[in-house]
Length: 418
Image (tube, rainbow, N blue to C red; front, side):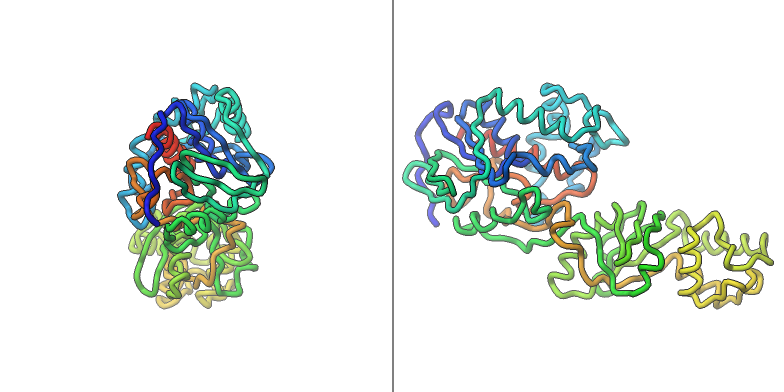
């Protein structure tokens, strides 16, 4: 599709229509309105910002003070940082402080001092109201058509005209909050292309049948994702054992790579080190010393103080060691097998949980077709993008909301002033 002609109206006379009233859409609306545009938000749910209410377990971890390019993933690894540099975390903190949101810092994770996600949403809604941004809820966008000067948008409630359009409809993750993937179809109808879209920041479902016996256990560990025999990525933290596989923040951090591996029909597995503070040599020495100190202790009680009882029994079962056997009677082979079971446990990943359980998606609109300096389409003048719709995803810890704020700011600013 060829580029349409650019409107010659001044910034103060532009009408910017934003499709999607999530975090990035609201920030885009505020920024565009502050830059003199008349702004309309079209939201297909009954209210804007629903997904914000579920972030940070209802407390809204809205950014993180630790910011590096490695915290964001994309097919084009340089793309996210070009956007984020224009509205970094310090700008986010200042922005919300001016709206009345004083933040508390938990090891770099920032939350509203009230610990209420609703406070962030309320502050944004009040600012939209102050700026006289028009919000149309329960409005489905059926078609966006470039015309000679701008766009005609066909909705479930009639047609809307616009000088500039910002698509900020979210991904396919957590569809109950409004992210149903509808924006992908709108973008594709305008000539844009998608990279593979898969669930991310999500639990992993594993092949083995033993998980119900250890379900509910939480323990520290290092999780390493394997595609075939190739190590892809690792993360360390609290692992949660479910009745179908593994969960917890370190699992979430690597899940996008598992999902992509499964998408491409690769063999995907996870290796877990349940004693990550020790090297193999250190853990061997630790166990040998423990055996020397308690040679008559039955293996059933040998791991008291180290592991949950469920996990102790599980490790012994995998290593084929009788719980009644005394620690001092373990053979060299049994000791080696026990060490490997604890520090090199492997499990086959069959699937991730669904989009309903995912916090975000990996993949999205190809960044090759979008200018990182403005977030304007390279295909159609006056069309902009923001948020999860793009092929950008962050790690856990407020990074996906920071992407929403940064991309919303950049798209909103340039839609208003271009």
